Amino acid sequence: MYTIKDVAHKAGLSQATVSRVINNHPYVSEEKKLAVKNAMDELGYVPNSSAQQMRNLKTKKIAVFVSRIVNPFFSQLVDAMEKRAATCGFQLILCNTRIDKEKELEFFKLLISKQVDGIIMASVENHWEVIEPFTKYGPIIFCNEYLADATITRVRLDQIEGGYIGTKHLLEKGHLKIAYCQGNDSSVSINRRKGYLKAVTEAGIEPVQEWMFRDVFTIEDGRAIFRKIQQLSNPPTAVFSGSDEVAAGIIHEAKKHSWNVPNDLAVVGFDDQPIAELLDPQITTINQFTTDIGYKTMDVMLEIINKKRVNDAQDILLPIELVERQST
Image (tube, rainbow, N blue to C red; front, side):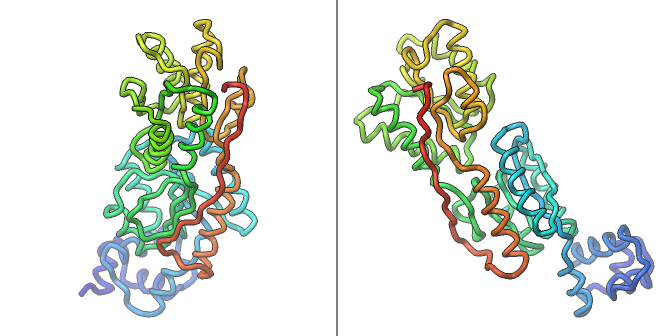
């Protein structure tokens, strides 16, 4: 069993300083408080009720994990979260993981060291068995992205339905040769693909492997996809993309090569980002009501922090809808 002497050694401080921190004595620097807190967490040292009380002090800060802050979806999402948090006196710490598992794990240290009161994961890079141990240090919830086996709250949308209604729209427009673009193997991408496959299967259509594109995220990725489509001997007549950025790239490159959208190639995006209305032709897309997702997720996190809600394995589903524009 560890003692206060062990904590002092680990923190590189005197036992007297550690004692003052544990007992909330004034005139102790924040740096020393953090060093003691980190040492106690690493050693699992809980000497008395005063130490436990220190653990429960609020920082009034919440971390938000995103994979690509340059993605307008995340920018809008985080902006909504920040607005809602500010009304309750909380601040956000933005953590851009860049789709990197190790970087995500580094950010969890914010919770371990009590620099934040909770973490909202709008992107997920690691498996649940890797993430789960961090829940003992404070609340973690999912936003949009999620892991099916997790035992924490998930604020999300029915992405299978989103993939289904986008593909169904193209089928109703008479398209039988529909390509599909997805990001990585996140829950969002996988479920949108399931929706796409459900719609084409119901229509009696066999998916064509060379029309399935993955690991695409950006406008430049969209341009590259069009160039691949153009070279196919049997090209699709429509594309359903899991991103307005990718859809915009496809449309821009198609016009550059004198293809008419939607007559030569119809395009559906996802997210209803501002670019969807600014492009010519405007992009038919799936509206996720991003601002509402941000507001709701922050409300849920604040309720959990304030002990007004239990953070258990529940799904809070929000609405989703097709917005038809000129690209189809």
